Image (cartoon, rainbow over all chains, first blue to last red; front, side, top):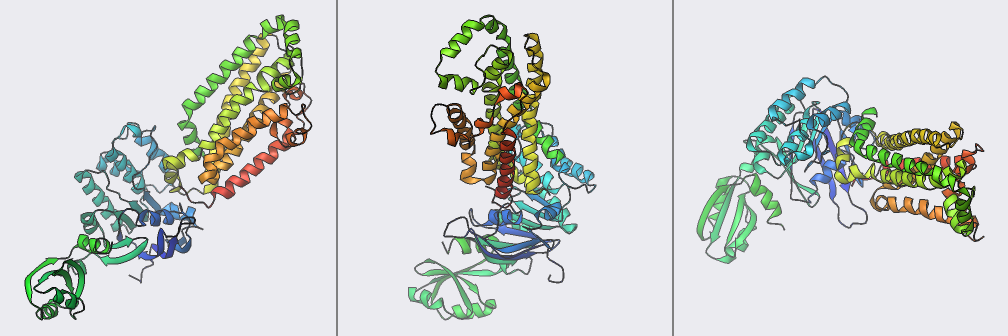
Amino acid sequence: MSIMAASIITNKLTKQYGSSASRALSELSLEIQPGEVYGFLGANGAGKSTTIRLLLNFLQPTSGSATILGLDSVGDSQAVKKHIGYLAGDIALYKKPTGKELLDFMSSLQPSTGTASYRKVLEKRFQADLAKPIGTLSKGNRQKIGIIQAFMHQPRVLILDEPTSGLDPLMQEAFYQTVAESKQQGAAILMSSHSFAEAEKTCDRIGIIRQGRLVLEQKISAESSLDTVIFRVTFVKSASLTDSKSASGLTFVSQTDSHSGLYKPSGSIGEALKALSRYDISELSTQKLDLEDEFLEYYGATE
Amino acid sequence: MKPLIAWELRQRKMYLLWWTLGTVLIVALLLGIYPSIRSQAASFNQVINQLPTSLRDLKTGGGATDVTSPIGYLNAQLYYITLPLLQIVMSVGLGSSLLARDEHSRTLELLLSRPISRGKLLLAKAVSGILLVAGVTVVSLLATIALASAVDIHIPIGNIINASLYAALFSLSFGAIAFAFAAMGGRWQRASMAVAVCISFGGYLLASLSGLSHYIQTPAKFLPYHYYTPTSILHGQGVGGLDVYLVIVFAAAAVVSWLGFRSRDIE
């Protein structure tokens, strides 16, 4: 990955609002490669939208920097935006004009790249109602117009804040198809989402952000550690639970009650079972750790 | 920048229509009653001249006291209060909302996600506001020229054009103050309309009443209305210090807007 120049790079990007003691975003460093879809997961207020707004120069960083296609996101903001497609979370569009009028206007603000035909493809794919005033459309239909305006000029970088919000399953599939096309053409895509299924389906890599800090980055692949087995263990004696937290071969995840806990193997499953065999166990079960578990581990167990 | 201006004008076409209609109707009403006021000139002037100086100055700005003469009437009824009042309300409303409305509705993000510099966006918004006020001014000027001729007010057209032009520029200066405050965002943006209204109407009161007390004569020299003398313009005697005031306000507003908006957080 490091051979290719990353399309999006943030270097200790930090945002602190006014005199607020806490940071909305703290020293975020990440890289997104051309042709990569990066899922940005986190609870409300975790810092996802702040990151996106910093990349688009809507907010000024307190410290750190970001580059997009090698250009500084603040100093070269205007040049950067020639190559960006942006979809805001809970998108706000003008209400009086029709969808067609808005898309014509948005096209007039973007340098011509001869992609009128792709706009037509998207209009057909999303079956957007472009003849009615936008204010009269449902949230889902407004979202479709938002998606078309973000993708229609075939940008090299896409920044999408909860893009499938309000879309029905059929339109979600149309969106995934559009993302796949952009990825194939080499676009780097940063996509914030609340949907784990969506992230697993669409993204090459995910980052989990909590209280402004990136707490986990993870590839989504068959070999991913997200497919790790997790042990749910109930001990006969509660003392065993305390003792097992530091046992070699096991990584303690969380305690579920006075005699029970969740563990991940530190190494192989065999070594983990060998470590567990030293204790009197009344119940043992296993499950696959998926993306949602990983997310909840960082959010649920540590809150 | 042209698409941005065209878009803004299109968004506000009904706003422009209603302001134009309203202003033309008021101009028509004021000029339409001139013949009956002229026919009662002696008694009308007697009433006006019996008023305390302070009240008379509020109406005429200390200019001509013969309010039934063509220039005295146009000054007192149209160019000193009514037309600037309408255009100040319009300009301040535009100044405080051209940027803020997009920011509050979050459509500003949509615009700034495109390759447009903040400076160009600011300029496009300002030009849109000027064009909207210019549209109302041109139509009301044409109505004034036509109706003035119809009611036998014979003043050189060039003087009427100048009076309308300076009334519009004077009003726009308050819009520029509101625009500069709105561009700074946050609490400045929320205060933009109140500040511009206070400077304009508070200034009108103080400047008009400055003859009453020497305590307010000096501060009045720092207020816009002190330099606004439509009687002189209608007489073709020049605009006094109004040009200098306008240049200072527009230049200051441009600098403050740009510095305030170029690198601040979008709310």
